[in-house]
Image (cartoon, rainbow over all chains, first blue to last red; front, side, top):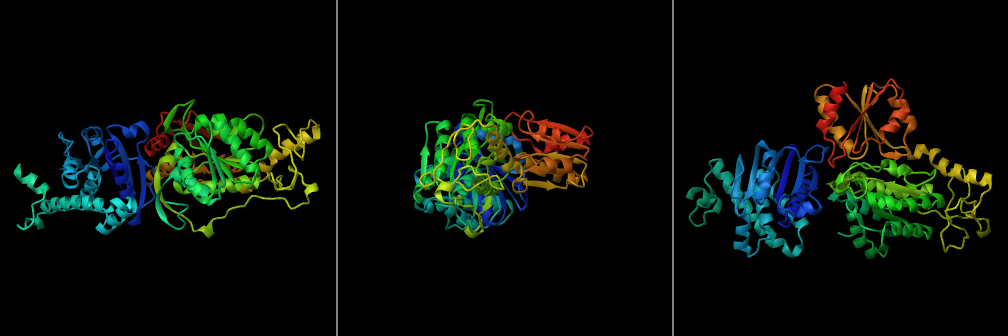
Length: 204
Length: 381
């Protein structure tokens, strides 16, 4: 695993602290080094609160992010505020429920919050859905590692819902990769519904 | 989570590691007044300590907090409090009392920007001189500065041990970055951790002297309720603890307070030294700046430029002899600090005029970056 800097940003209460802890836990299960910092106090309740995670094979010395590999932006303010920090070869994952002006660069958009409300009737698992897509697109860890990290990080009573949300995000992420790499998406099988990520792309 | 997760690997916050280190060291009593950025220490202990039947009290302020833990220690419990700059200022009086009455305790001061309430959520290293000289009068000071989460855990245990060993307050000073960051931490197995239990005298009741002068300057301490009689006062006292103005007793007390530290530097001194012998340019740093220094060293190594790093883990007592021996022959010593220059005076004091001691200050609430250090090194090269 090469040195990677990841920022999960959004407004306070979108569950990015938990998402970050899951990512950190996954890195530990994958036997990587990890360093995790988070905005604190009033900053953590604002419109662009952040959780920064650095993952590497070697010990991480400087604890702060400087050039981001991946930015997950769950609202417009954080997309605007942090987009300049993303590396040229890095990419964005944004929640298109709230982000309508996309940052410049390689952007993957998906309406996590809207979908979470549609599927689960509440928006609280939008973070896990986003992490699912993040997991697929980043290709950092195996799926089992992610599942174990989620199991270790969320309360048992909500595990199923969280795993389901993660699974939805992951499936959408896989479809994007399939399309990018020219594979025939498995869900083009007529018996299965076409994932939103693809449907949206083709309807444009 | 409950208790110390012995042997497990987890994503742990610095403050959390301090709290767990205290549990690992067998903390009996915590009294405190939660303050950013040390709140998590109090929070986690408030949750964990009642489960195992230990006492946790939130006091009305920091003066009461340190007073309460002095009482806790005198009654035989291993006691700790945690605070940050403003609270640390309030605790200075009690700290001096604990130094004078030779009460072991652990004081955690997670450093934030100052003076006064300053920058509550941001990093600084502005309290290092206060930790040494904050309370009035000549007094001993043992201060440890961790630079990662693992050290937060280990040095907290060490702080409890040193406090017992030296019968004196020990201050643990992570800075805000270290207190708030989370890192991978593999906890040791329970049997791998060495905890020095509180001492107790074995002499007959009538022979006991609370401030007996032993070879090390420290004698086993009886606790209230154990049957031994002694008196505790902040006034300069004789070996039984009663106030005195007799010249020989005053001198003996003051000398012992100083020498119990200065004669045991072998136990206290703890430095991290990288490439110091073969380099002409040295970075002298402590706390979170050490991480940036290591990163700068790696960047410079790629450019085939060699620098050394000298980092005291125990910042007080200052490693005078080692610094003089190792650094007095160098060309340049760069002293990056998250303040307007505090430890640099110690380095200047110990090096001759031929050594250029160059400061690098940052006091805007952010860390010194490796790039800043690299630029500073290239400038002096």
